[in-house]
Image (cartoon, rainbow, N blue to C red; front, side):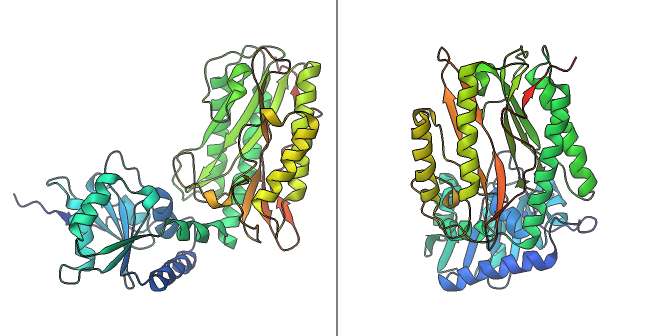
Length: 407
């Protein structure tokens, strides 16, 4: 039997993607501008976020390599045969499927796009998202080529959002608010973190389906933490049962076609002691000031320095755990961090219109210390010409989120 190393298969019809074809074409033009600027013959994308950003296809690698080849004339995703035609249906452009019959058919598929007789002199790759094995194989395959990292330039392009991106992120923020409202209804003594998380996740996925009936639904999740489990921002839910007086951390994360949004709130169940109230009020004071500071023209680092000073005045700076916020777009806890737009002391990016960032101060007070627990609030802001629009509507602070157990 003659089995091919790679092939094309257009099974069915193209699916409706989260963005218009015009939107993808604009992104592709900017990508090709980077080709021209850096005198590159092609760019090999390997990250989930950039392949999704430029084509619409979000891959599931499961140990297999995936890619997208971009030249001055072509853009083609390279996917594994296990996915059949889904990568073609979910892409704005063309697709080549490689098979498992022989080793390195992925590389052969890449060569098929550019042709054997025209070896590229200069190739752009994502240094932050290519495995050592694939990097070595590419270097061996294109032994006369020079490789250049384009990941930072691509990140800068993603940091400024289009109108269509802003709309999908606004819809995500609405879904997060709805998920939080549903979870609040079910918080009670004896419920587990898992119980509340399932309720929130299911509600958000159903809401996403109402807004985007043609989408694929994946990766929406909730981290609902209680007691000591609130100490880390990314602690998964457990079977811990809620008890009266618990500090709670509600974290809702709707995912819409690769676009992550988030809502995070500190809560207390039934009652709160004085030390906890003082810590919570301090964190919300910093949160409010942070919301005021986000506007065009200010550096990320400047925001951090002012909020650090406020935390120091309040006596909680030594309990602060991470940066004050980050960018939003095609990202999740699996992929896509835009590190150049994080609100940290070592980031001097200047905020500009159509960037989207969070404000999310957090302090963590260790067990055995009065007021112990992790306190975190999180809002999403769309920067405009005059300031910023807060697209998170769920209330925060002690006046709203001391939750009476719902029996």
